[in-house]
Structures are given as C-alpha cells and as structure tokens.
Length: 445
Image 1 (cartoon, rainbow, N blue to C red):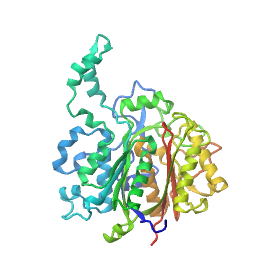
Image 2 (image 1 turned 180 degrees about the vertical axis):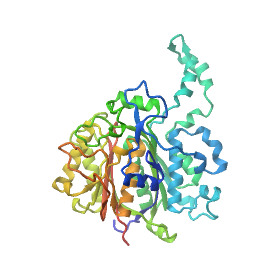
Image 3 (image 1 turned 180 degrees about the horizontal axis):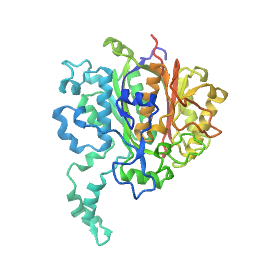
Image 4 (image 1 turned 90 degrees about the vertical axis):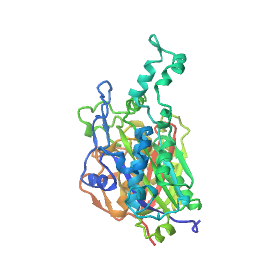
C-alpha cells in the first residue's frame, strides 16, 4: 500500500457565515467572531427558532464567466454556494481552469488536463423556493384542498419548464464541472451532514487509484430556507430557546446544549496527486492520509448512545493513515449541539482514544457557524487543513462549559501555536446513520 499515489491538498474554497473565502473565514476564527444572528433571509417570526448562520452578501457574477450568467436562473441557493466555493478553491490552488481563463484572470493554456480533472460534491435535500412554489400550488386548489388533477392541469403550468433543475442534488456538481471543465469522474453524495467527508474520501480514492490527477470535492447546502428550518424543527434538532441571544445558541458538547443552529454555506477543496502538484509547483497545504466510513444500524433517526459507527469510522481512518492516537495532534469532532447526538459522538471518541483524548487539542466550528448540512464537514476539513499549515489552533466558541463526559480540550481564548503532524475529523448524518472520518497530515517530502 505504500506504493499508492500520495494525495495532497492544494486549494481551499469556503463560504461561511464568517466570510467568503478561506482567508476572511480563518481571520474571523482567529478573532473569535460569531456568525450566528437573527435570520434575515426571510421573516422567521412564525418559527420557534429564529436564528441562523447566514452568508455575507456575494455576487454570483464575480465567480463565473460572463457567458455562463444565463444559467443563474436555474441555480438554487445550494448551487450558487457550491459555484462560489469552487471558484475560490481553484483560485487558491492556482489552477487556470476554463472559468479562470474565460474571466480573464489567467492566460491560456490551462495548467490542467480537463480529462484528468474530477469532482465529488456532497449535497442535501435542496429546498424549493417557497414563494415560487406557493404561487403554483395556489392554482391547484380545489376549494381548501389540494387537487392532484388541478396540479397536473393548471398548477405545474405556473412553473418554468426548467424549474426542477434548480433542486436536483446532482446539479451542484453539474454546474461546477461545466464551469471549470472537469471531465474526469464526477459523483454526488447525499448522506446528510456526512456528505462532504464522504465526497472528499471518494475524491481521495479516485486519485489514489489513478482515475484522476486532480479533484474538486467537498459539499454545500443551505439550511436557512423556510422549508429546511421547518423540517429541522419538526425533527427536534434546533435550539428554540436562544432567539434573544443568537451568539449563544449553539453549544457543541455544552452542559446546557439544547439543539443546533441552521446555517448556509459549504466548502470545496482541491486534491491533487503529489506528482501533479509538484509538476506545476503548487503550494501544498497538507496531505490526505486516511479515510473511514461506517453506517449505524441503531435507528435511522435516533443517534446511537455508544456511537459505534462513528468509532468504526475513526478507527478505519487511522488504520488507513497508519497512525495511532498517540500521533494525533488535533481532533475536530462534529459536535452539533444536539444533546443525544453529542453524547453518542463523545462516547465514540472516548472509546477510540481513551485516556489519551484529554491530551489532544480540539477544534469545533459549530458554535460560530452552525450546521449547514452537507457542507458543514467540508468547512471543518478546510479549518483543519489551515490549522496544520499555519501551526495554529483557533478558539472554539461556546465550549467554556462542557458536559462532564466531554474530555475534548478546546482552545478558549487566544489562538494556540501548535505543530500538528496529524489531525482527525469526524462527521455524521443527523438522519440516516452515515458516519465518516478523515485523517489529514502535515506534508513531508
């Protein structure tokens, strides 16, 4: 296995409530900024949870070629987030893709073979635009009841012919691959909050087995659509007691945690074979050295109190990376702030790391950014890679009063200097049972 192709991280592109791009997001993390506030994207007055993590304003036209702007009309919020993340990732990696050249930001030819450029992107259940859908539904009413017959004859006629293309989960990867001319294997992963870790894992394996030299991978999703927030509320996942103090709403592993916070955002990263990165003199952030995945059979909606599947994923990732708990210099758990989910994840980490866990510095981004579903773990991954590259661990907000069972050592105030040789990060789906873990390591020749 030592003869396998090595895979390195050369580009980071994120869109978070703290900023668009890895630099503003990282700087905000170092400054202990919090991106959770009262929802402004729509009026949340009728909902019991009225806070969320919204992205700063951005112009999609600044992230795509001029000739592609007509396609914006068939992009949902989730798609636009993915497209923005992709642009920042390839720019950060120094890749002169079709998009970058057509925008006049680099001279042709490209420095990448499009037939060896793949994509793996995690996506969620893309929510319909409520105003657009409600207008069509209103014409399908038979008195006060919804009529399938009228929906077929009248209601659907009030939707544009390409309406559905906004909401198919594979459309995130579709637009990204077209814009950047990525012609190698492209896959979409829809496994809830585990999606982006699984997508990065698949991209990693695609390069290892030689089916691509470069992959753009990660995930994106908006959980701030009215329908998405309502769905999270119906499942009991959101904190409903902090509408007046949004910055304290999400308490990952907190003693008084009572739910997560919806947000929108995501992250896409560029992975390359080491040889390909060297040949173009690319900056190398870190190396992906191991991945693991598992699925809980406890219940498709309820978390396993022992976190068995999370523990399996963690062990698989470390085995693949040929590291032990003694080698890990940074732990990045998922930590949604949901009571039972955090308890199960904590049980898994305790099972795998035992008494060594308190000696390992830890980082969680949930207190500052909330949970945006399929894109959340990609943000964690980008933060972990940056921490390794810059030898710095920022503070984890809202972790000052932890559950007694929690033995993670989160930084509380100023960033901490640390030489991190190996980091492990975990994620899991709130529904469905999928779990994933990745080991990323300091790059060494």
